[in-house]
Every structure is written in structure tokens, then in C-alpha cells.
Length: 88
Image 1 (tube, rainbow, N blue to C red):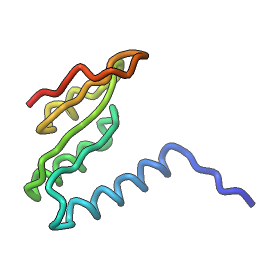
Image 2: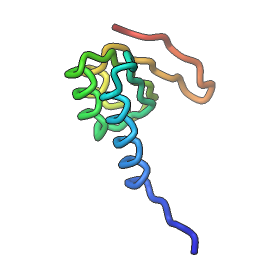
Image 3: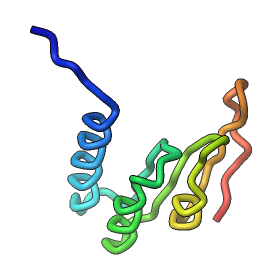
Image 4: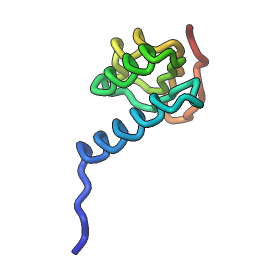
């Protein structure tokens, strides 16, 4: 028997682990490497709990809503993988 893992399973796992980190009082910053707006509730909850938030993503398809919600945004560039920098 081999487990079949699909994208939705991975998203759920990331969400569970992120929520555990958000409620960990030792954590000050939550960073997510994703372009997917489905993770917007994680950023919102982290900010509600007083955490600084960072999203790391690339175009095309980097959610504008996710970028607007985060305290810091790191945009990865094309195939080189070099960072464009971060924005507040």
C-alpha cells in the first residue's frame, strides 16, 4: 500500500502546521512560500495574533490579496530564482 498524496492534502498539512506555529508564543514571524490565496486565512490569523507575516512567491499567479495582506513580500524572479527584494 502506497499513500496517494494530492495538492489538497499538502495544503491541509501546511495549514495545520501553520496554525500550530501561530499559537506558539515563542514564534514572532510566520513565513509562507506560496502564490495561493487559499492561504490568506493563515496570514490573517497570524496578524490577528500579533505575528509579523512574510509571503514568498513568484509570478505568474502570485495572489495580489496575499501580497496585500502580508507585512513583507518577497517576489522570486523567473528561472534564476533570484529575489527581487522585499516590500513593507
